[in-house]
Image (tube, rainbow, N blue to C red; front, top):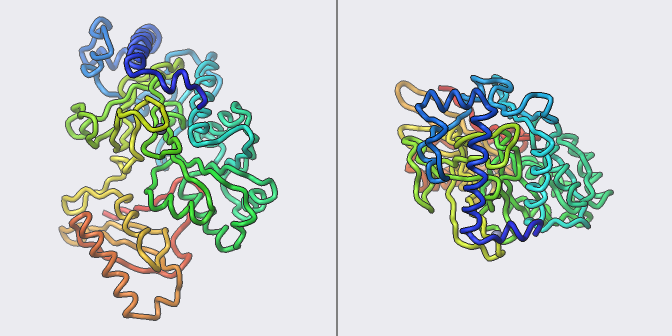
Length: 428
Ligand code: ZN
């Protein structure tokens, strides 16, 4: 463990620490973040309305719109000369949500990342290949500085140039791979095609930046011969380091000394009891540049406070089922791409790459699942094609109660992604 005295703290001590830090954050916002103070006042909240952490449920949520309305630095609680780093979200349209860091925020962030890496079994004897993009995205620089802080040797490859990635992975003897799960899958397929798995020393994968199913992780593990671990974070909340899996892989431990979390019903905003699935809401407790109250992550998950076998006492969250933004509503049914992925990845003869196309035909919404065959020769066997299509269709129907169209396409025809995958095309 990186910080055992904090990571195994008794629950009452965690709560007491959270309360003290929350009240400090509350005063920091009233003293130094005018735009956030304005949002609270507009919701009829005064400084005196909060006396303890349990008062948090009375407070309004902060969402992505607050970032857009106050772009770029309006939500910050320090003047720009105290900010030493900026990162931004990777939204494909519009302006990014900007995150800022003081020197103190940077020091905390490095520790948070080191904690995630240590929980995944990384030690300073490792050599980590960082195949996250370096840039505005928090993944590349975030993992880089956290690994270095631990004393791990870092190979900053960034994303892209697959052949070079493989060459360096082999020649440098990388033992840890850091990337998005979709890029790890892509690299792992290239490793399989080149037949070089035995020449690699990889043993651990640190995957984040997007969610993935256990089935996809299993495929990456098989192709690379590694243990795949997940970690989680958002630029608005610092970046990676909010939570990460230990080697028992029964949920990602949230760094509760720095983040207070709630699960809410995304429709009503009501706080849900432990164990129910809903949207994750996070209040950072130690941010200097960008404190926030009850930030709606849009990520759908579930938490458990049960003590983990690893000895850590911090709450665990399930890998995210998907973002509420990615949720498709097809003929009244809620569909997460991850649910379809879990069906596809278990099916023989097809690869892990897929595209979901949503259309409106007349007044009806239709969902087409395009998926790649591993072996193109299957396209010549009508009976085989029909059989595969039928199996996929009936499994999806079992899970979602929805009939979808399945189209099998030739190998290597669906777009690959170096960063976060885009698997939905909504033509409605
Ligand atoms: Zn654990």
